[in-house]
Length: 424
Image 1 (cartoon, rainbow, N blue to C red):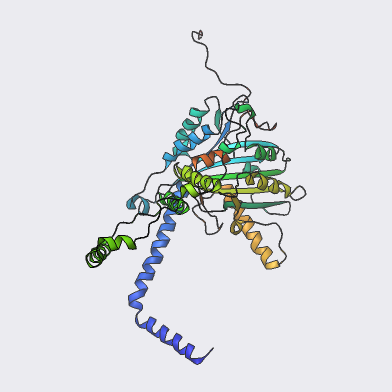
Image 2 (image 1 turned 90 degrees about the vertical axis):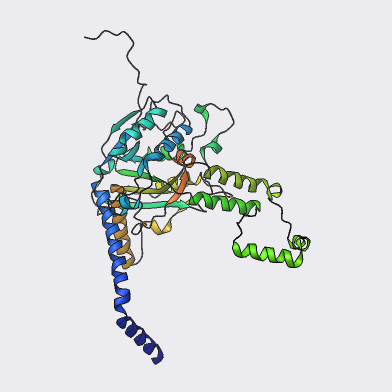
């Protein structure tokens, strides 16, 4: 390094020393502010009480995913805008819910993990669409697993998914899985079938969990982004209000050149290119407009596969990966692995192996505690935005179409006692 560089560094340090009274208070204030916000977040999540609910549906229930879409739409009301006093003094945070598929020991279970303050709301929304269902407080299946994994006997693989394109582009939804219009629900194609089949065939010491962690989106930034994409695709000129300078220039041009000359210089551009779009491009425009027209949820999709080392088989992850690909389309959107949050199983360097082991243990802790996905610095999670239709496609309660034999269900519908039944 040249001596001139050392002189420059010395001059910079000397200047910083002379002006410490100017910049040091600002740096200390910023650090204290960030620590205060972190403390409020930790305090809020530690004081929040949670309840794990298991949902069981009668075997004869034949309801389409639209019912689940209504549930997600109703639950969107759990969040509200927080004013600065609530956020930075009382410590309130944006609440979230966790919808889970769990395959454990050959059985498939459906859970909703919710703060206790929202329990009645969650149950009311589910009973409104599935009045014959049973909702009960359940033990966490993960409590039957070792407290720390990986260890000498157990190992794991974890992953998270993100979107292949920007949030406004939709994935393939349940409406596109219909064989023909008007087909009975009993013979429709259910995108949940593949996942249910995989999770219901695990052995006793195998465990797969898929967590759909969601919180409502309150701002319209993602919708405005979708509108801009649509305008770009159709070639529509974005209307822009002229400022003072633009108006003055326009008036001077009109005085100097005359209104006729100004009009001649203006390029005539069609308002829209919609008539010239291909059928595929029109589908993209319609898909984006349909997505941004519905309520949005910020989501993280987390997967973990835990098993004894002698039973561990990565084919299970490959099967789930294949099931997730059925929601992908080439011209719209789809899921792909978030490599930053990926937890692998083998490394060829001692240092990398130790680092990966630490991350795998952290991933397992995050999975068991359903850690808030807003904390993305360790897990490198990438929250995505899905609307109610997309969420209902990924997570809905199975009807008779999904016939996984190891899925616990109610054997019969619940019914009220007949009127006039004598009591006593």
